[in-house]
Image 1 (cartoon, rainbow, N blue to C red):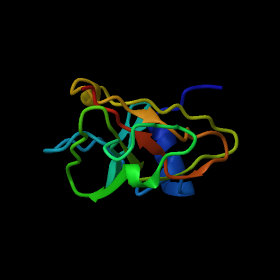
Image 2: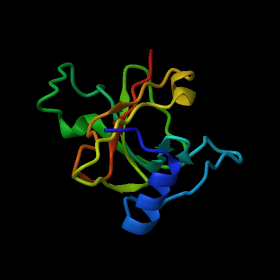
Image 3: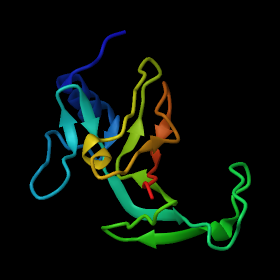
Image 4: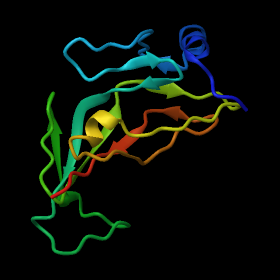
Length: 139
């Protein structure tokens, strides 16, 4: 298995709908870059967030989150309070072919701001849909 380049990613996106919407170049004008790059694709985070806050409960059980612990928010900017995190989705919809494996990693631009991205639904062979991300912020 080889790492595929921008020409392959572009062909798969434009001819086979692997990424929608698809940006065939790196967009950088006044925003954090997104779109196809030499050997990858920088996806965007949508405007809808679920922000975790633990003000109503002292126990956090990762298997049974209390729905009251999440605040739904929509906007261009999401402020994540200390000791919290936000759930988000990608703007792009991915249709990963069965014979392809992808690796999703956080963007260093966010890491330099103290925001760590954890992909909670990796894009594996044959997967479809959006990729969820979790963005904790250090206290």
